[in-house]
Length: 239
Image 1: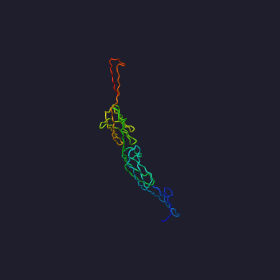
Image 2: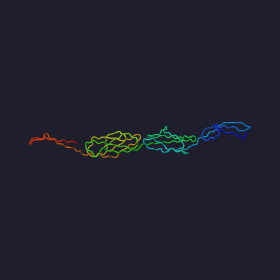
Image 3: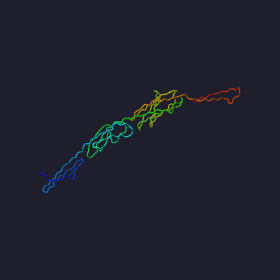
């Protein structure tokens, strides 16, 4: 009959459930003259949460890159994957980002693309000294800066003439020119770049090669000599 008293339990507890989940509900008649019971399932679904992803365009630095995630309600726990992997990416490339809410009472997800672009670089060209003397070796040095991880090669040019190609090591590359012609040489260096760093061409650097300063020494075949005697002199020029 209608209006009978009864008791509820939810998974065996008389406390009304709050969190999302499935609960076995048992209803038992609580009357002197009536008895009866039934069971059913109460399902409390997770509430929907909003998820947004930002900071999706970044530049390579050699360090792992994360994205910025905002949830509504604020402060919900979530998991992030990049191309299906939970570790943060470091190298240049495009990474498919999936953010999934990890909460008992909320659900939601979002996806986007994280783009890590190549780092810009700088290069400075110098030598072991200008002006230099004709015939003296000249050491050219290129210093490349940018990200914390640099590889690749540097080409050294005298105008349009390639002087040589050297491998970059710890941001430095050096090339020795054993014989520059007399005059002013307009030099440049080109960094090749690598998978994570853009290449770059240096400003021109003028290497002035001046005349050498030779020394002259004179010796004779007879010393001391006698009056009227023949003497042969030898002049030696060294650079």
